Amino acid sequence: MNLDVPSLSGTVWVLIGIVLAVQTLLLVIGFVVLVRAPTERVQFGRKWPWVLIMLCLNMIGPILFLVAGRRPAPVADAPVAASSHVASTVASLYGARPGSSSAAPGATGASGSSDEAQR
Image (cartoon, rainbow, N blue to C red):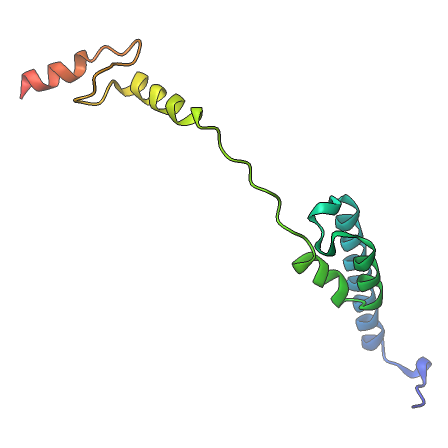
């Protein structure tokens, strides 16, 4: 195939520039994410296969890494004591639940008894 490069239109050059810019941007983003990711969160357990994939598969390689090349971060469990803290905060703000044996410190419960006395 004989391609006459100087005879290409301006639109073709703009499209080539856009494609090259997108490819370069994807490679830069992919490499930055790969460098910052801990090795234990990278598929295959090593980073060098992803470098080869990103370099050899031009646009598809970085997209493949960003979509499937990283393992999700482990989720930290919430502390169990937080639920009792929330319950005590709610009890101190709104008073103890009807029928509960203990009232929160500082909760008066006077508004609850006066409401029932009015009914």
